[in-house]
Length: 314
Image (cartoon, rainbow, N blue to C red):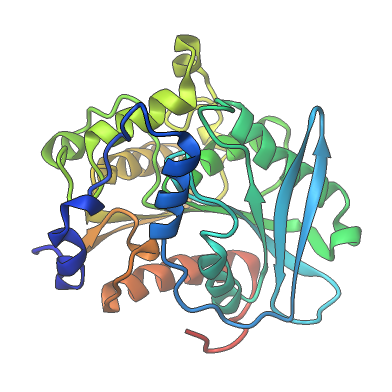
């Protein structure tokens, strides 16, 4: 089907096409502009929202803890934001995390991992995994059930979540679910969808190659077994949900991971949402399909965690 008409105004402006920034523009300025373009959307009220830090070797990693109700102990979803590994933050995804809480009834821990190119792979993965380890090791202090947790991420955050799931599988840390929303998984950037949609809409192949170069840096990182599509540890993954978009260069990467997990017998639900483009949950447009995609992910998380929606919410 054609691109959803809800994106027509956005795509009519060529300034919205994601390409590598000019090399003379400071990264701080690039981030400010990119972050400002991400839309918060509706932000349901929470019973509690608190910011904290986890002390890891040589750095402190920030997180934001959202709770839907006053229960002493809750299942938890650890969330990693998108932004090409280079931009995005806890703030840019505050609205998505609040809606995730409202629609699942679980707590959400949103991780402020360090960004590339200043911090390259596996640094951001180690940040997210460090927060997971700290919170699950001290569940009582955080009001979290360490035996009932999931990972969720969009775009680059989805790729980070897959790598975190590999760390967890290596260390036998239990996860109930892995939920991925249009995930960035393949540094090769040479799939059929990457080639067919190299010029967009919105996200371009050129931009993805730049994002991966910022994230991976040293050539040897491209062979790491902790990269998302490497075969290592996939056989030990939890049940997984993958939502992709029809007009997204990354579509085939999500489908490739689904195929590999399915070959290992992992319980899986993967759906491509027609008419959608990359990043649709963070864009200034919405349609019944965007809502259906978010509901698809949240319903799978509820089933895995044994929760109920906190309220009807937006």
